[in-house]
Amino acid sequence: MATEGLVPITRDYLARYYDKYPMAPLPDEVTALAERLRALTADLAAVSPLSPDEELLEQEACGVPAPKMDENMWKNREQMEEILFLLNKSRRPVALQQKSTPEDADIVSTLDNVETKMKDMLKKLEQFQLKNADNVFNIVMTYMPQDFRGTLIRQQRERSERNKQAEADAVVSAGGSIRDRYALLWKQQMDRRVQLAQLGSATGVYKTLVRYLVGVPQVLLDFIRQINDANGPMEVQRERYGPALYTLTKLVLTIRLYLHLSLARYGQKKIDRDDIAALQQAVIIYTEEFGKFTTFIGEVFVNAPFFISAEDAGADSRKSEEYQEAIIPAGKTHEVILSVEAVNSYIAWDFSMPQGALSTLMDIGFHVEYISPSGEKTLILPYRRYEANQGNFCTVFAGSYNLVWDNSYSTFFKKTLRYKVDAVPPVIEPVEAVREP
Image 1 (cartoon, helix red, strand yellow):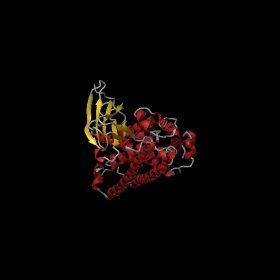
Image 2 (image 1 turned 90 degrees about the horizontal axis):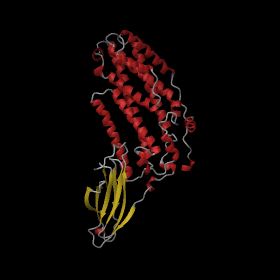
Image 3 (image 1 turned 90 degrees about the vertical axis):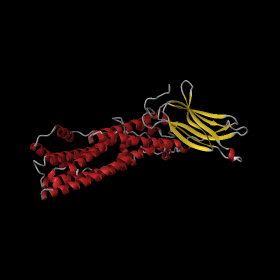
Image 4 (image 1 turned 180 degrees about the vertical axis):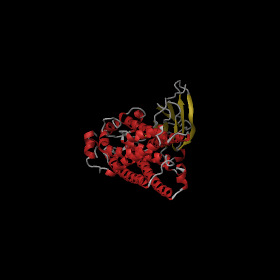
């Protein structure tokens, strides 16, 4: 695909693309079962008044879902976990744990079936979201240098994701609820979207990182710059496929509400055969339809026109920057100063000494030092002689770093140095720059 052949990714353009992917309507059972469960929850509320937390859950189940599609995906995932929490055998009513009567045993069997279906669907949703996130990052990476810098950027992203996971785990360890954890997970997701928009406009953390992007079509940069806009191109996707997702979101909220109330009031009102059958059918329909939705939207997403790789755009990131060569006379040094704007950037290098007839002499001294604003030098990487080396380190100060190749020990022989160096900015939002006093 030639870059000049690409057209702006506007609302009209996406609408024509989505016309190729009509979505089958949800079966009437989805709405009918949601209404049935809402009627059952009203009966349970009459048995015992709703607690404040139950009132909040009821308001959410009866309310209007969030407009963003990915926020709804996270909300569905949250509700699946909440339902599995309720279905944990240790949290079920004592009569169900002990299977006191044949009726109790039948209910336990149904709840176990519901638990299995929810676990399977949760796993599929987690894999779906992970795959989509990887697809977006991997497309961006096709425009990055395919050398040590691209590797560092990928490693930083992996480290950032591990930090996000650790942050979520800390919420749980501190006694936070499932809702608290998902509030954090959604914030992290929005942070990713903000960074993606920054990539399009070369602001924020991507102000420096965007210089690596080689051959990115302007239409793609324009699109991702608007990815979070309320009336941007992605709004077409929400209008086209959002209503079905909203319906499924409301169904899973209703399932959770009914399950919570029925288990909490089990001592006052046992679940009868018809009611548990309605719950089971609602879960079957929900998991089937939500599974179909994720499969469908995944196909729409992966084939979307905003997924333009460097190869498709006719860009070759591998040819973005060639190695440089320097001749270092005997008794002299070659120095390269790199400027770092944000801490947690990486100073990285890759160099070698092309071997000649006197191969045993073809090595070079190398060290790295930090230069303070006052000009004072601090050794960062100690001096050592190499024939070739590739390495990096994470900076703790913003400022200047001097990479020195030292041939001062040689009396007669000049050296040919082949090298590539860079200061790779952090992929995550940098903390405020710290400069050594």
